[in-house]
Amino acid sequence: MTDAAQRVFSDLVSRESGNPLFRYHHALALLQSGARSKARQELVAALNANPAPEHRVRIRRVLEREF
Image 1: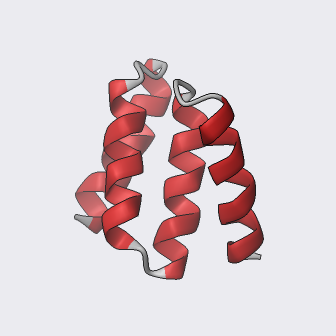
Image 2: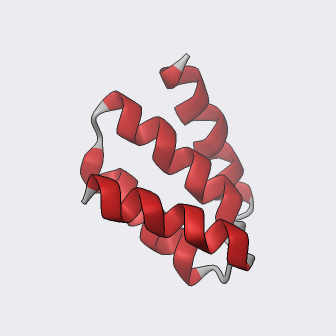
């Protein structure tokens, strides 16, 4: 499931790089596979994409918990 999720979200991010939720979910899939550096990059990019306040909180929680 993780490999499939990575492929799906990678494709979505390449199509809509400004979508913070796509980046957030891509990061979660990357974390599950152990790709921590790439996951952190996606989480930071998600924050920089100006997510809604409730999503910003979720993204920051993952960053604090994992990094």
